Length: 343
Ligand code: ADP
Ligand code: MG
Image: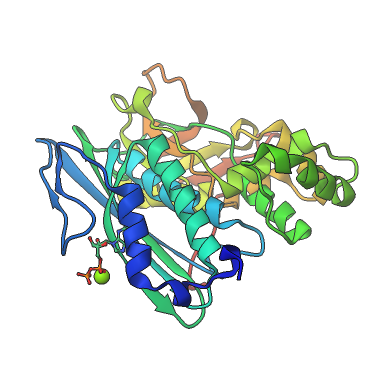
C-alpha cells in the first residue's frame, strides 16, 4: 500500500510521538527538558508569563471540505498567537493536544505538522509537549501557548474620550470562507506549482473575478498571519484581537471597561478585494467587516491626543451611548453581532 494511504491506527501512537520528537526537539536555554518525558521543564525568563489556550473542533471551527491539513496546523498556531499578541506579549512555548479519528490518513498527520512547523518558525515559538488521542467522530485540536511580556494590556482600560483603532482591513476572512463554500473543496495555496490548477477552478466558478482578487481573501481565511502590535503598546489603554467580529469584540472592550462606543461606518477599513467580491456575492461588504469573524487584526483604544499610526474608527463614549454613525450622519444603535457559540 502506498504510504499516502496508511492510517494512523496502522502507525500507532509511539511512532507518531517519535516523529514529533524528532522534528520538534529544540535546544534552547529556557527549555531544560522538552518533548519526550512526563513533563517538560522550563526555566522562564524574569518577565511576566502569559498563558492562553484555544480549541478548534471539526465542524465548528474548521471544515476539512474547504481546508488542507497544512492550513489547519498553521491556523491553529496563528489563532493562539493572536491572543498572546493582543495582550502585548511575545510567544515562546507551545503545547499541542490533538485527537483524530483512527482512520485518519498518515499523510494528514504529516501535513498538519508541517503547517504547525511553518507557523512555529514564523512566530519563533517552540513546541514543548502535548498529547495525542483518538476520537470516534470530529477531530479536536487544542494549542496552549506561553509567552512573555513586560507590560500587559487588558480589555479593560478604555476611558471616555479615547479613540478606537484597528490595525488592518476587516471582513476579508469571512468573505474568503463564503467563497470557499462555493468552491466546495480545499485550495492548495502554498505550493506554487499547484496554483495554476486552483486558478482554473476559480475561473470556472467566479467568471469575472480575477485570481488576484480572490486569493488574498482565501489566504486571510485559511492561513492568517498575525502581527505583533509593537508600535501601539506604549499608548494603548485597552486591546483585543478581532476573532469573533468587530462588533462582538468591541462589545467586550466596552463591557470590561464599563464604557460605550461611537463608530463611524465610513471609517471601517474594507479592502478593494472585499468590495469587488461582495458586489459579486450581492452582499454588503460592511456586513462582513462588522460581524464576520476571524480577522485577527487588533482592536485597541488610545488617548485622543496621542499620534497613532493605525486606522481610527471611532471614539469611546459613556456607557449609555452605543452608536454607529452612517455615511449620512445618521445614528443607529450598535448591535453587538458576530459569531457566538451557543446562540
Ligand atoms: P504520557 O503518557 O506521560 O502523557 P505521552 O506518551 O502522551 O506521555 O507523551 C510523550 C511525550 O510526547 C511527552 O513529552 C508529550 O509532551 C509529548 N507529546 C505527546 N503528544 C504530543 C503532541 N501532540 N505534540 C507535542 N508533543 C507531544
Ligand atoms: Mg499523554
